[in-house]
Image 1 (cartoon, rainbow, N blue to C red):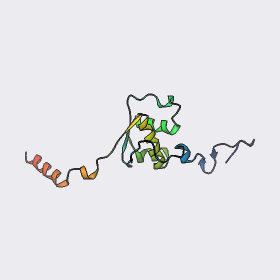
Image 2: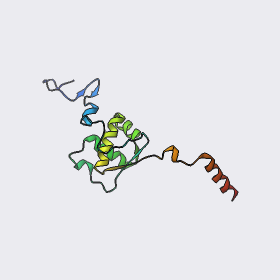
Image 3: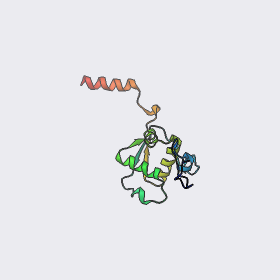
Image 4: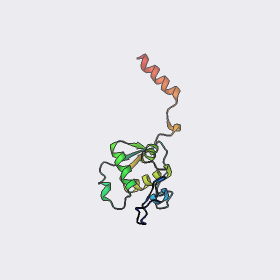
Length: 131
């Protein structure tokens, strides 16, 4: 860890970058209360009525960053992890916290089993062309 020359360490290592470990961001948790499995393509959307997340002292800077990114546009879990340069597991825990606080909601993708069969879609397209 680097210092300021007077023996005071900083939370930054010149070669490795920030020294804060991912488990510190989640306070050692691997899941959030009520958290369901979040797919990598699940969309996270900021709630319109949510108050300013920076005013909430219980939120970490990473929580605030997630809300801000999602206010600009809905983001997938994978996009948030990449944009914040954090492991997906950490981002899932942080999103679960934000869902509990009602600052964001998650729109899960439609499971493939519930999608219409390709042959049905082709029949519909053929029928529309016949009109």
